[in-house]
Image 1 (cartoon, rainbow over the protein chains, first blue to last red):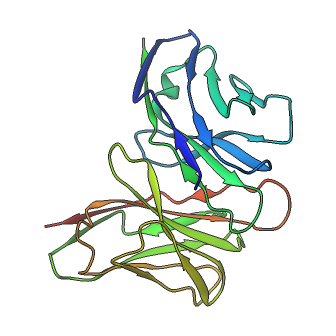
Image 2: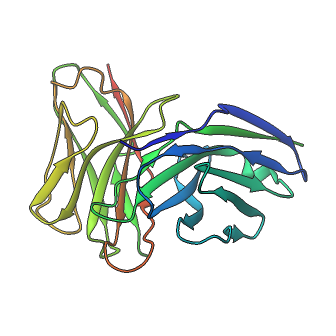
Length: 115
Length: 114
């Protein structure tokens, strides 16, 4: 069974600084997708960024980028120029590229932005 | 506007009662999912459905039931058999064909057992 581990229950960062959230996963599959979701206080889940495992290039979306290390099964999220609106729970998720599209989530990291 | 709606936003239930949470999507998505969220445990899959009139158990299906009579709708019933139903419930949907398909989430329902 696949597992996703987020070892940092809470993180904080000064506004305008950079922060990295960690995620590791365990799978025997070679073809899969990885996602970072953001859950602000409204509790609406919002997709931040996604990565296809077959792509070596790390995904980037504006201030958000990932460091995908397939051999190490690591998928960290870097937030640059942190803003107050980035304060949220961040969840890492895994999905194999076959079958029923089930997502497996980590337990989340609560990110606090310090003004 | 296309999206996923969940109702009600807050739901209170007495012990021993069944309650049904609504989930509707107008995105023409094929698959729909129900997740439960508890503090410190992330999201756990309850049930999912990839096609009308068919659904599968997720990781924590005991005490829950679902139906998928229409493509747009995937209601979740929390039965009296669910030992600890107080939680935040999220519905999601996705298209199954094509390239990477993200799951879109509804705004959630907070269920409290009194």
